[in-house]
Image (tube, rainbow, N blue to C red):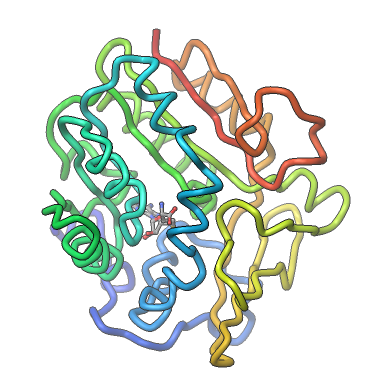
Length: 277
Ligand code: SAM
């Protein structure tokens, strides 16, 4: 890490266990704050929230097939988290999988999970999307940014910068796969989650505590009574698509809960598949 881009507040100590949101948590709308939200104890709980087996079943071969259909061999997972997709792609035999994330806690957990599920040695790199090209090298056939991760960026400048970094790290005909919660439906109609896809751990409550045009603050409550929060930016679907077009992606297809046809209110999640050529 260099001091030029990152301040002390961006590099919290490893092993931190308490989330800090200050006096008014709804005022916390900052792209770097994710590092303070994924504290060690929350990371340890993440796989309870994101039940791997249930997720494996609900996603099926969707991402694997999208990548295979495009002849993808090398993948950069920019939001590795605890490693679900990196491990899945290694299991499926993709030649190169590099696992990046801005959170050291998440990467440590991902590395352990790689060993635990199949003895895979993950190639982990700590990198913030906004300076991805500085910290990760090479060009990839595909970049994946999954699990409602892009929502952590709070300014349009940061979103454009991150997408431009993704674009630059893809080969000339590369593909970006990025998903997001259906915030349009939450903003326009209120919240209702079938908990079918990503947040599928039993006995875990994940629900919004505060929603306005600039913030979706979710509360996660676990069976042992522990509680954590994430502050996220409520991305509207067409806005995300527009940004992707504007940084240069030529063709963008958006799926709703893995289906190509859907009514906009229905899906919990959207998956955007953005092609460079
Ligand atoms: N993809 C994983 C999954 O589906 O389980 C993790 C999803 S988790 C909601 C979001 C991840 O994005 C976290 O691991 C977090 O550290 C990472 N993240 C958020 N903002 C980031 C940024 N600006 N640069 C790099 N990683 C970031």
